Amino acid sequence: MRRALVGIPEADLQSLDALSQVQNVSRAELIRQAVSMYLAQFKPAEDANAAFGLWKGTRVDGLAYQSKLRDEW
Image (tube, rainbow, N blue to C red; front, side, top):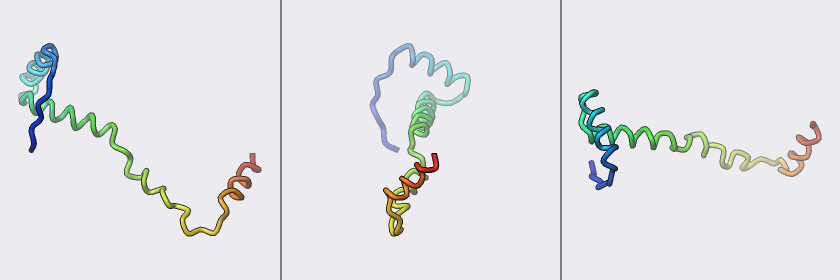
């Protein structure tokens, strides 16, 4: 595990210390959990890349297909 030097406001450190005593974990563990949760929120969906190249190799004209769909409206 690598270490990172991070500046945290005093008030936040006091809150982390209080929470660490309640949860019986270290301040560092709370920070690791918080970073992991934050990064999980912004992780791109795994399925997002699955759509790229979906039409590759098809013989359908994209513009004609689009026009056909719009004609249904």
